Length: 320
Ligand code: FES
Image 1 (spheres, helix red, strand yellow):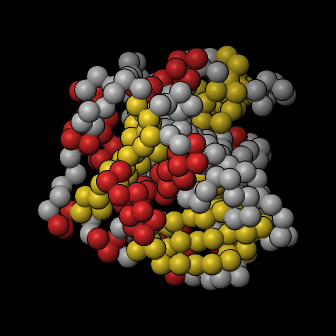
Image 2 (image 1 turned 90 degrees about the vertical axis):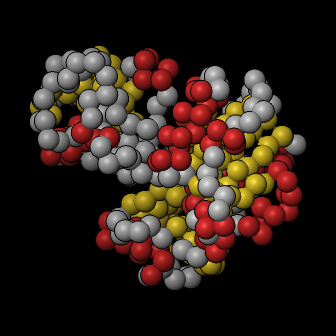
């Protein structure tokens, strides 16, 4: 983790706090890719993931936009109510799970509410590269629309949809005129992302050209058995380097099981969202329950997120 200091707090909109972080020792921060996020260690052991919204070429600061969640699970409430300029925090190096497609000739961004944050760094990267882009940005009210000052400089490329002004989200229409070289990036409430996924499928947009960033797992996700046969209630994980065998009970994750056996492993969200617990898989078939791997990566069966994923076989051999 990297020790940082809160240099500046700014009110970006109703319920959205801008947080500018600089390295505590005054040095440069690790560079990041547009769309990346960091894990932020807050008080009382809370660990939260926030997208970096500043220009990816900047190494002197990380800028976050933190929406006050209602209800808050503790993280956003702490940031909004307790965090002060000058406070020290620890952040992970940036991780990119929501990246601009290198082959994308044009980029169509769709953001809902605080989902605008990763899109901001992507827009900055597109501007730098001279890439074609547009944004549909849906908010509940104009007061809640963060970063409008920046976005308003791009004229008709940014289309704002304000709920309480009568412009309801219309994911079908947002994909009008999409061409075969365009990529779609969506970050926002789960219902919006589901609607965009359906709209893209209905228009025949290839799955690999549609990218999502999730801030929270759908409530039912952890208990679902997504495909085919029900997974075994409990199974064995084998740690290849030591040969240790551990039984993962039906009501615990692989991560929790290994912690119970005294192993301290990297993790942050425990919801299959952040990628920090990714573990190489040597043998066995994983039942993937995360939101990190795409379909090809799942099918390759070479790694899994041990905070949520389980096993389709009696045994999984992990490269640990
Ligand atoms: S801890 Fe975040 S994906 Fe597992």
